[in-house]
Image 1 (cartoon, helix red, strand yellow):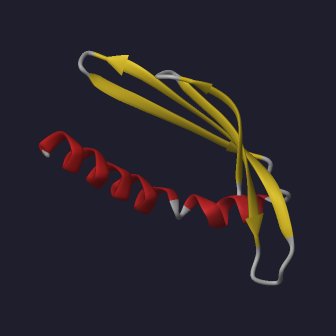
Image 2 (cartoon, one colour):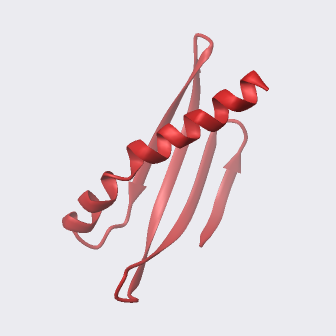
Length: 81
């Protein structure tokens, strides 16, 4: 579940996300996503905080490339369509 605490279109999103582990335990992480226009392109910066251990943080890091690839596909489809 995500709870947004700031939506500043088109510059910034801030929200808390609850992560539920396979064993049923859960913890909240913070997301701070900024968007900056740079010469006709957009730079997106993601700051993902709040992991209880470095190991859990590192485990989640591997998911970002796939997520960003899927997001790029959605953006490309909307631009083309």
